[in-house]
Length: 325
Ligand SMILES: [Zn+2]
Image 1: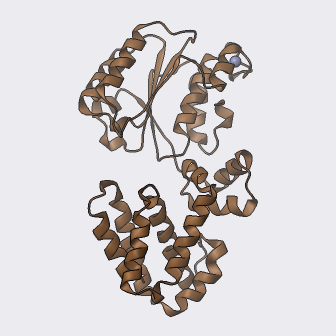
Image 2: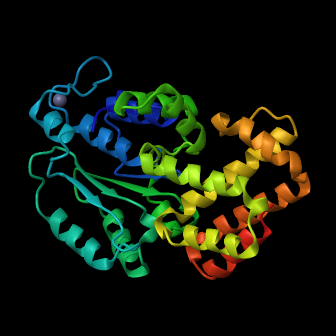
Image 3: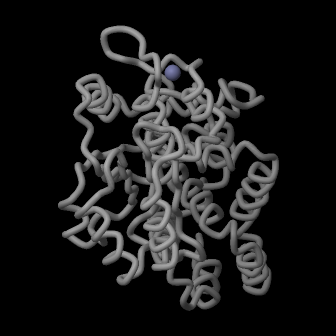
């Protein structure tokens, strides 16, 4: 955990927060909207740190980083930074009741207690109603940060109680810089991951592992040999993908990236994602028809968009592998 200056790629958000802190006019509830892995929780932690520094530095009152409060926030051990997140994909009323009980007591040492509620759209109705009561009458010196990837799913009454800040996917150069700063990784891999992770740092970090590169190699090799696969081999390929449910979304994203590149190469485009693979893809698609490639991409993306429901995954996968060109 660190201060505002360590938040990269969210300049507009950081400017607003810095101004609020330096003027000491911080709303009691913020709603951070934006996709996964772009720094919403990190920014919440930075705000807690900046608000509680005992010796702020300079005209804009930046956190000093060395006072006891800063140290506790940096060590992620400050008892007045309360985090709530979905358990089994849901935030339940018991979690909100426990929060209410905590908030009835005085903060341990912070002048501004911070409550971070992640993925607030996962609150069930009774939990959301209980949370609304706290937001309507917030305890003194307590700030709330709610994060969401789907603001449209929130109760309008919750949304209207918060100041909204919108986070965007991180630019590729920021992801590359962060990967080089925090990971042992060579430049080529950092570039490849940055181009593939859709601006999602969480996803980028999962791609650093050798397992991801193995998955990618296996998927790409299989797609490149698909014209030699008979239907039973194709179905076995689909079954292998489904046998790793945690990697299903990633597998579909990778397959989609292969077809996107194939289409791009056919149209002499310049937006190839899998640059290290472009030669091989170009060779393979010499014998494949562009309409079939487009149809393949379409079917992969359709499956990907329905993946959350998990309904008919087997049927969809069978259709997918039997139709892929
Ligand atoms: Zn400090």
